[in-house]
Image (cartoon, rainbow, N blue to C red; front, side, top):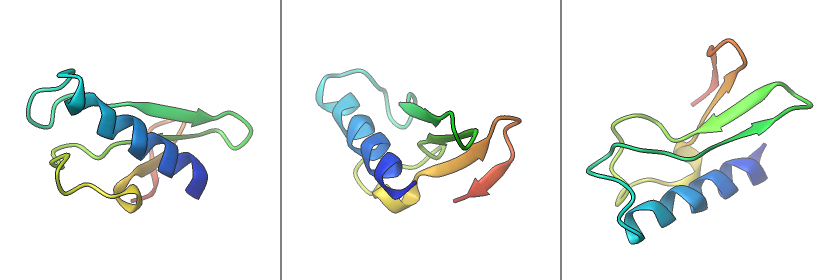
Length: 67
């Protein structure tokens, strides 16, 4: 899961570089279909202070599993 969190973090960090977000709005997420989990950027966290460890893991019903 750590690898997927790092990938989601890196993808999210590209968004402001290309002008694809305003303030904290917008995100990239990824799914681990084998585990039935989704990794997504936390809401309201500034891109400038975000870390891979800040990524949130939820199950397919939206329940927070980690983060």
